Image (cartoon, rainbow over all chains, first blue to last red; front, side, top):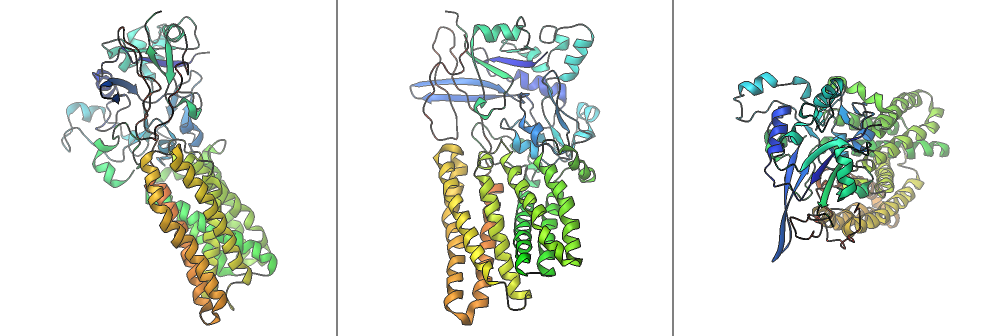
Length: 217
Length: 314
């Protein structure tokens, strides 16, 4: 089996938001919709304060609550673990949005553009009417992954088959790969270093893993 | 998504701490109000049929409330023309199951208007519908105040209390001789159940199961709800018992207050105390040769730090 996941090294992430930008470019998301974003956390109290940058987005959960509540079967989980939305079936009830504990889903009911009413050429060209009034979220760049697999490439290794956010990461904080393959890049990282997953106590089985201690003993 | 938020798309995510969800607004709350009150009324009316109670007014009112609730949520969806797709997810979704049950409830309720004996069966789909509504909230894992297991008995108890309250109101207005005696007792029992569950629910939310801001909303609401929606109806019922002159008015007032209390509770839980989960990390990372640090869960009451081994894989 295959289970796609992202490993985010919190020690490496510098909060540059390049992944956010790359994602928005790849998916042409409207203002306010960020499939991938990086949280800027200030942890601790003076004088022991540290700043942590945390990439978040759809966790493509093992047990996605968004799928379980979807009344239309628009939200599905592929055999490789990716949680997808069929925009042609979704009725935009918003149930998945309140079911997601990672605030990863969005619904936009009317076209919005970066410069208010003045859409740019890029926005006009890439506007997708199907996304209006329905739920939308990160797809792990499924088109790139599927393209890569169809052409014998390894997602997470070959850039053409890797999500845009991971490709763009300038500090190599993000890694994409198959956690079911013990020899994959992500499996090696998870085996070697300590990690946690966000809100794991909710039983969702999120598939973004956060490395928090990567110094070899 | 509320219109307000659509106009300011940049406000859809507000940072680290849990923020108030905007995907479900008053229209969604309307579904829980209409569905809860309507099915509560239908359940009590239907069970009353075994005691000789039969009123087309009550049946029509119950079905109308459920219908209004469904219409209200219809106004919320982004693609109304695809509304029938809601029937596709019966394998997992309580929203679909609610729609299935509605497809039984309405024909059966309509048939009971013609054949009174069928009124004795209406409580079955009505109870199922009310149960589905409670499970809809409970399944929303992203909203801590909804996913509590106590939301289930709270929603059911409130629906029954609202139904008993409406029966008292309509009984005064539309039934010869008013509502049967046992309805007042039913209202007392269901209000007692509701306030009992509410106390535990509130305590758990305030105790750390909900974000601080959501808990604060519940704290502010608790006193007016306890007084206005629960104690005042009981006081009116007592007045009805000791002052025959104002009995009808006091019963109607008790019913009205119990119903309004339930409606207010649902508006608060669905639209005011509906903060999402927010974000959290279990550990701060070690950078370079430094050491790792504590976790961080902004917007929540401070919880005891976890041991360094949790989730650690080496």
